[in-house]
Structure formats: C-alpha cells, structure tokens
Image 1: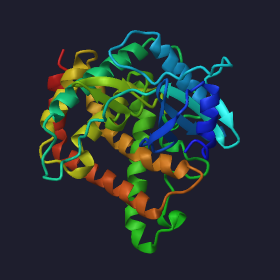
Image 2: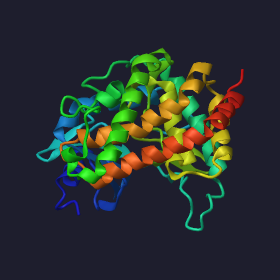
Image 3: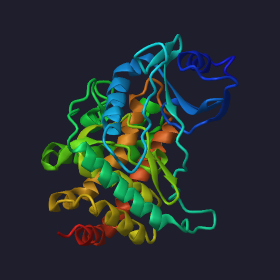
Image 4: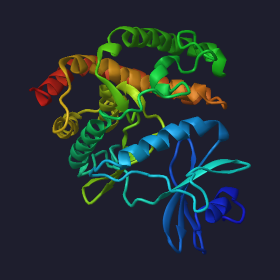
Length: 345
C-alpha cells in the first residue's frame, strides 16, 4: 500500500523504517488519517494532517512531550524525531505527518451490548478512567502552556464557528434542511443562548487549567484492566477542569440514550477521580450545564469545518442534546446528590 500512499512512502524514508512495511489497519479517527504500520523494526502509528493544522500540531506535540517528561501510570503518543532532522513533523505535497510508537490496548466500550446489557467490566473501566483523568489533570496543573493559538475550540466554545456562523442564528436553511425542521433549530437557538449565558457568567469562576478536552472512551487504551495510554491531545488547552469530567460522565453514562440505571458506572468513575481531585461545590452545581455545553460542542465543531456536514447529522446531534437534557431534567436531583456524596471532603 505504501507504494501508492505518499505519506507512508515518506515516513519510511524519514524514520528509517525497515522494509517490508505493512499497513495493518486504518485506525478510527474522526479528524485525521491514522494508519497502523508494521515494519521489521517495530509497530507505529502514522498520522496525516492538512497543512493548515501546523500551528495546532506544534502545541499538541509540545504538550505531549512536556507530559512525557513527568512520570505517569499511562503511556502517551510521543512523536518520534526524524532520522536526518531535529524535527518530528514531516511533509509531502498532500500534507503533514508524524510517527509515534504503536501502543497496544483496546478502547473501553460503554455502549449497550446487542443483548441490551452493559459490558461485564464496565464498572472497572469507569473506575480506572476516573483515576487516569485525575492523574492527568494533576500533572497538567503545573503545565506552563496556558494560551493556545490560533483560536482554540475549547477557548472559544460556542463562538468557535464565528464569524461564519452565529450560534444564536443557526437555522435549517443554512444546512439544507426544510421548514419542517424549524422547531428543532428554534430549540437549538434557545439552548445555545442559555449555554452562552452560562459561559459568560458562571463558567469563568470555575477552576481552570490545561485540560485534554476530549477525554472519552475512543481516546483511551485499556490493557490488563488499567488505562495503558491516553491519546489525541489535539483539543488540549486551558479550560474548566470539570468540563473533562462532564465529557467523561456524558460518555460513560450514555446520557443521550436515556439510560435506565447509569448510577453505578458514574459512582465508580467519580470514586477513581476523587482519589486525585475533589470537585468543588461550584463545579458540582455547574455539572448539568457543563454536560449540556459538552454535548453542544460537537455540532459547533462540525459546522466549523470546510466541508459542511449533512443536515441529517446535525439533526441527530441536536436530538442527542435534547435526549441528554430531558434525562438531566428528570434526574438532576439524584445526579447532584451522587456528586456531592462522592466528592465530600
């Protein structure tokens, strides 16, 4: 395959990969081309990017290398230095590329199994994910890389797609929808206004630090019952630390699927996280809004890309927000009590 893939061919030369080099698999990635390569001198991950991501990549890789200098219980995707250069970032006509050692592990699965049951080790996974996030955030508390340029998604939040799109003016017509979708987009505009008021008022007073900002099962590798690696720091920047907790809880509790009984998995995650960090009363009180904000951000990210998503995919994103919001409306009291109990001093 590398004979017709310029990224693979260039990586073989830049990193002295020993032939034969096999493309084992294309790895799951929403934003980049990622390939598992197997050479005679090891297994690697080749990640390919468009040229406009260069400034982003510099921040991400400097952060990962900063973290790698601090002992931790998990591995990190540290970029390799090219053999004949001091750089870790290669280029071809089609774009940029990096190479990291391949880390063995599997992403934890929190979605319901085909039989409608949860995975038998879901609670153990949630606990070790909580401890890993707590450990990661503890390490990042002293990270000097606060400001990220250019404009970062988790610094701009719902304003990220501006000036192209105003979140308070989004409508079906902008994305190929019809008049029958007007009510759905009216709900979005109302929810966006509420979330932007939260960001302007309560959010700045929450504890802020450099955060991963996409701490979710697809970016975790598990092995032997523990977190073997934390991947994909492309969205890392300074943010409210509880937003990472909100993301993790949203994903492991499956809040946009109207879960019947997500309490045990949430308790285990919080138990692990609390071994490192205790959420403040302000963070606990803000958690429903933080989960709402974190559920809205994927839509903003989608419409900010050069190639617009389909209206169907945006409609699905809004309906996931509605499902999560409806669940929180019904269960907020019990949810807050759980957090207060798990993070009691």
